[in-house]
Image (tube, rainbow, N blue to C red; front, side, top):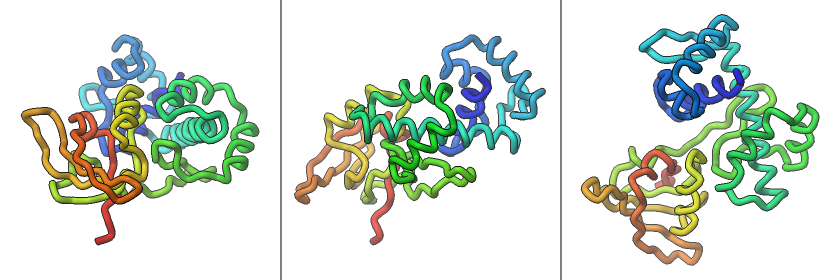
Length: 221
């Protein structure tokens, strides 16, 4: 679906990435590069994207509007599944992918009202408003944080359910306070101190994948 393509392109830009290449879209959507190329040509004709071969894909203003609406749907549904139906944060991404194309706008408005108009989903991702505005996200990617810096986890990527389950095992989630101790490139881990609710700190080795999956909101001091 066109919405899947523009949403994927928008999310890549939201997280600070460059325009997506055809191979990246194919890998994420598990389709062939030739299928992606054909669909991108159609999206270009429809005015949703600008596609320059070998240079990637960017959204037009119309494509941006469509993408933000789909992201809003996806993140509201994820929030509803966790808050009202008891899903874990590692279970909702695939469900929301299926449901976001099926629910009506009226149903979505009821979900939004029932949840009290949330601004962020269970992974800390900002939920766009009805007007298309996107709440600010204060965090920086863990991989860009220097050793010695402290902050609170305010966002976690939902791209890998197994990674989310691993974070659960380690006791790392939204609101967890971390201090970056060392980056052990040779071992493929980032050593952090985790502070629990009682204030006790413990050393945790996070996998290298966490560098691009966790955002830290810096401490005020």
